[in-house]
Length: 395
Image (tube, rainbow, N blue to C red; front, side, top):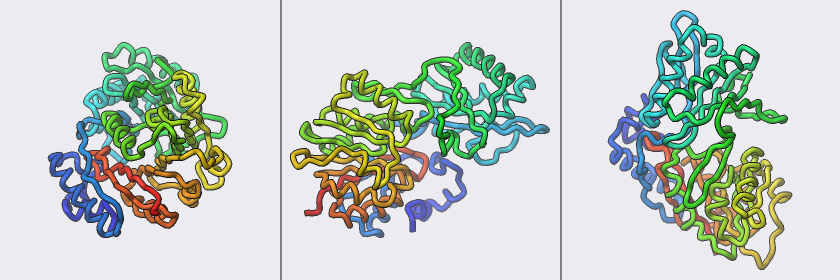
């Protein structure tokens, strides 16, 4: 029985919910159900280590700083902006998990794109994506084609956006002719993304602790920005990196943990597949004067690539490892390759609860035991959790 099934066992009616089935629950009931289901999941799978209580969200609703709507045009019945699934024409979907400002922006686009003059532009749109923080918003218009008429309408729309009192500080076109289900292309073109900045800055900014980190609007960043400081603080405590350590940050993105946890280490090294994330991280390292101690490498993370790209091991250089793979987990052989480096401590971050079992067992097979696991309610209103797991050598 997986974790979602254990949630449903306690609240069967959630089976009929949508993308945010727990959003209508009182938050303390949601927390209670998640703690009970995770405890049962832990015991059922005979997982070791101390399971800590769920860290509650300070902002359990209206927290998402990345949101999206799929654009559909029915020639007879009109426009719809949906979460991704089919929606009745004439509907602009709203969510309790998104800031009111996001919903206001989607209503603005719904009214704009419903006008006959914008119908060709609306037909070419795949998704409207909003990113940023809770006061400043970056709009990404994911579009299936780019010709002279589309560009003209986009420029006109950009002028109107800047006049509207909606907090929109930047906008860009992102061309995806495949009309993929993923709102930013899952498989990125070899020769780069087809992007067109309409107005505003090229990058977004995440302020965390005393740092300002930059990242492109086309790469992953945590959707619950309000939780980021607590997540960083918990990761720092559980990893326990010191000034003598080398930090290896795998799936590092634009360097959130590399900079916040690694700037006080002897050196830090981040690897990430998305080259634009790495370029931005390298720019940040130079801007902060840390490029001598903090390095980044663009590479797909496999057992073979780690052997090729990680710095050589040294007997006098203790290492700590932070492993934050996507929901499906790390590729086969990655954990065993990392274990061969004999890190003194590992922090694995799991954004899919069911993947915890595979990760813990693989680390156990390679000589590491769970010290503690700390679940974070990063995605409140849904059954999903982000779980930090600290591991140390079994001996």
